[in-house]
Image (cartoon, rainbow, N blue to C red; front, side):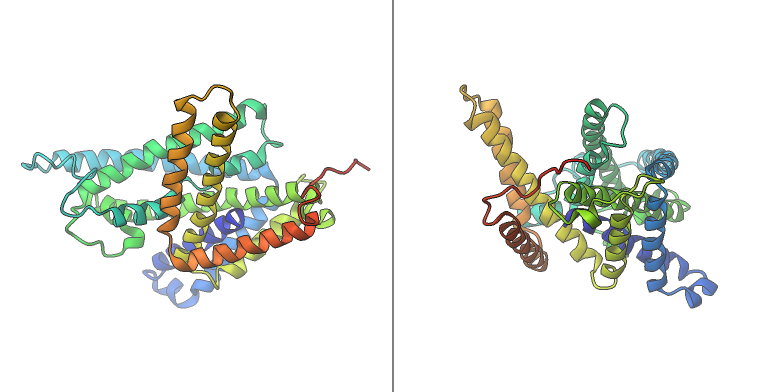
Length: 352
């Protein structure tokens, strides 16, 4: 569900943001409706990924360089703004971590359950192991470094934004809050950061689309899904074209029925359950089954499970209901596919 929803959410967000930008251009506002932008991004993701992983990789590399430059400009502008406005309050620099006037555990867990979206997708790196050079080393490094860089960079970006924008002042639009915070430091950053966020989500959607297609291909190749469709590879570009087109079609159709908020909460529904599963597996493998019971193997998975469970409970009820229905359908499919779990769900077949 997560892998399919990721490109869908990116399609919705990119279309909405570009539509908002174009409403400021009278000619485009009158002739390019929102649904046209949804079609544009869903089709673009599909066509680029059909051309092969190298096309996607080159484009994402170029986008990353450009976005990195914008991040540097934002930091420089924010630091100049903060240092240029003297602050007599001794708690000014610590208030983003804890403000007794606004803090509540409900707000903390409610917001964090949404902020988890920042980390969604790093596990998709593993789906591209067959395309990577030296995957045993590089896939591991890419996954760990992605989590580390995202965690540190996101924390720094949010910290300076909270220093720039006072908590007592509401944002004109919460969906584009960071754009307003950046513009306060330097007015031209409103358009620059807004465009950068669209580019970032475009790159994310492009990679997520391919990751979803590769995951479906792996399930098809091992017969967890019908192999004739999901396990087929287009010979010229060595891409599971059927899956790429299917994911594009789902992203396009779903963008007309899903809201952005419901999409990200459903994404986090699946991700948090998966993270709980990872922590539970680590607890069984490295504590329960180990002869020597070490505290270092007990605390991290138990703490991780509890935190993920608390965040999962704070998701919206619609996401929990829809996600729960999807999970129940998956269990029913597993029961049917495995004859009440007496057979493996997936198995490799001999090459013809």
